[in-house]
Amino acid sequence: MYTYTRRMKKPRTEIGKSILLGLAFWGILLIVYCLVGARTVAEPPADSLAVHIASNNHEAVEVEQVEADTPHSVTPPPMTEKSTAVIFHEQFGEDYKKALAIAWHESRIESVESHVDVTADGRAFSAGIMQINMSVHPIDGLDCPSAFHGTNYTAVVVDEDLYQRCLASAMDEEKNIKKAKEIYDRQGWRAWLYSARKVGIIN
Image (cartoon, rainbow, N blue to C red; front, side):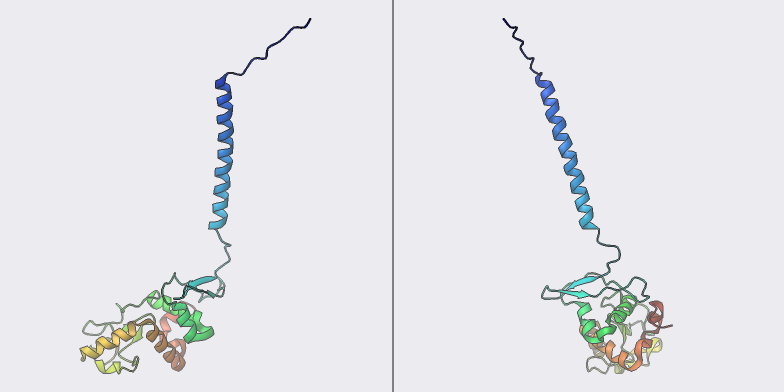
């Protein structure tokens, strides 16, 4: 004869607690995994300064790495439509990074009228990405100096129609950069002396 011993069942409340603890454990592991994974994706190597800028056909153009200790290194802001960096590269070749650095100091790489280079009658005489001086330089076949009486800060606008056409050409990205390259070929970076010194291209 043997004694039959009936095993006691765990109360349902204890089973529920065990399930909840298990779910909580795996939930914490999942959250930690997600956080670590997101951090890995969001933080590229610190020494990587390579810039990928989309051209107008949405293909990536890789701008080779710029060393952090190079005085004229610059990482341009994101650009859309036709790539400004590509236009600079087409015009300036291997010197395009220096041109971009100067453009960043001159205009933050934007087509803007100068608020510093202003004529005696309050009109901007420099404009565009590379801040072309319209009182001195013709642009896109236009005799822009003829729109002014005098040059630079003492000039006054005497031909409003010509001035507006010159201003429109100076504000055109491609025309401005093309003109900048013509000026560079004749005068070098000293045509933008203040900016060239500020970004360390010349002493």
